[in-house]
Amino acid sequence: MTVRLAAGTRQQMLQHAYDCHPEEACGLLAGPVDGDVQRVFPTTNILHSSTNYTIDPKQHLAAIRAADQEGFEIVGVFHSHPHTVGYPSVTDVTLAPDPTWLYVLVGMEEYGSPTVRAFRISDGVITEEELEFEESMT
Amino acid sequence: MTTINLPTILRQHTGGAKKITASGRTVGEVFAAIGSEYPKLGEQLTSPDGGLPIFVNVFLDDEDIRYLDGLDTVVDENADITILPAVAGGR
Image 1 (cartoon, rainbow over the protein chains, first blue to last red):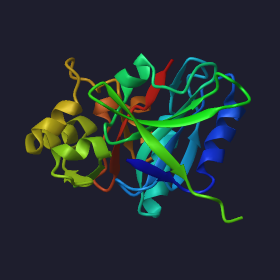
Image 2 (image 1 turned 60 degrees about the horizontal axis):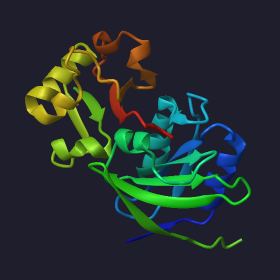
Image 3 (image 1 turned 180 degrees about the vertical axis):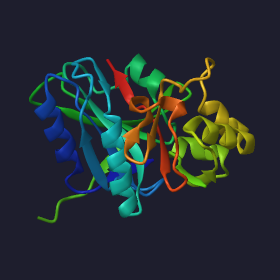
Image 4 (image 1 turned 90 degrees about the vertical axis):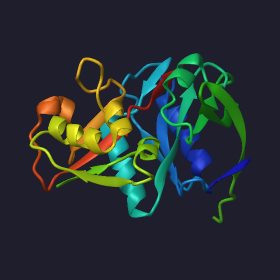
């Protein structure tokens, strides 16, 4: 299944990944349930680690409220791997909170050529999703 | 009655309801009331030692109850409780 992401979302995730480098960057994705990703909410990695992340719960709450105002739900999460490929780690799989969520990975193994890939993680099984980023009108 | 906002992952235990209501003097009592009506949901809100599960965050209005009195935090009946999954991962 192809997942569509609104214009600007890819750039927002990449910018946050670079801003946080060498720490892992993280954030939440919002949109209609089972629909496209419309919003990216960059958040603080409260671990400030290059190998692990935990989203600031207060910012998670704020993202839920902001999404709710637009009739959206939190439908996924993104984070970066500052020095490795953008593929879910064992820890990512173990801690994945919701099988319906989209898990977007920004891989920065090659610092100047980051990758953006997305996955579903259900019962420990990783399934890659095809991404389609809408073009910006500006 | 206190309104409890649920994340998508927990709505499978409430027939898809995004919000439910329950009564209680404290967060723990509200969770006990939830467990009576939605046993599967109640299981997700309690750790084996009777405390709050490590991968669950609970906000009373804007405050994380871990920084208040945990499950003993007193609940105003006009307050909102929001339950969030902890979102974490790593290499």
